[in-house]
Length: 364
Image (tube, rainbow, N blue to C red; front, side, top):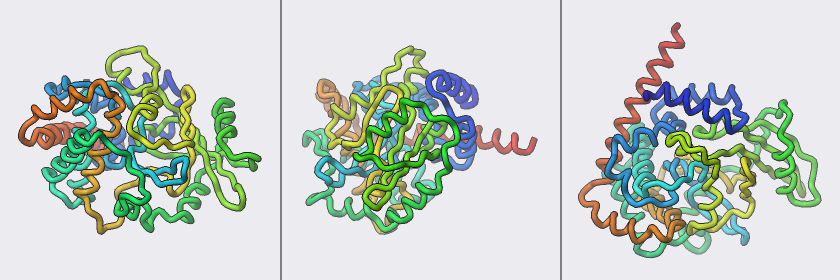
């Protein structure tokens, strides 16, 4: 199956599970043709098709409840019940039982794609080594969540850089167009229940965000409370693309389980309800894009922390950790670097086919 058939087949499967937004799917296709990194982010369904073919040995490594769609821009911040700033994996929509190595190889591959366009200043080998070292150290130490309070000052300063300006953030929220379609009553009920009481009037807007989930319904509720903006989002979710890939009828959303089981300080505003994920949106509660980070940063250290946080999530499968440690100890040499290079090559090949076809269709 090539990238075109895989995409068409996956989108048919998706349309049976969510009321997809057709114009957003078309926008996703355009972004996929622009560059390898957005293509990579938008095509997790294709990654899991290629993974066992390109890395058959690693695909058989011990399984954990894996993140799945992991990449260097799937990290962000939120506030815990005490108001402390937390940093960690932002999106668990594609969580599914899979080889622990999948998350590491996908994370490393995303770093390689960023390096190729000079968004990261380390070498590919250095990136793989930093990720693996962080993962190994976290496994040995038993893991620890990233609470950006008295610890991790450098990461806190990185996360709260000047480009995460609250004025600009709320300007972007206000720029979202009004929602014209009739919203599902379940989504409205969940949004209203998540607002502080007494609830202020709110506006419903259509939010376009993400790449892997572009096409899923996103309903933004924007309100003013105690003199300043607040926002909630209801995002349509479904079972992982793994179910499509394997032809499984399961509708289970594993992200909710992973939030509870992993070494993680939870966001009290995140709620999973059937096919909806409701969450608070705020300047300090969002995904961190690589381009928004300060130019002066310790990139090897950042990648190390990403490797550590990956292990934090894998600790959500406690019965598998001993097997993971044993398997990891048997991996010698630059196994992660080699695997990421292979998946990087396979991703680029798919992207080139997609790009060339997209250019050709524009000329026809």
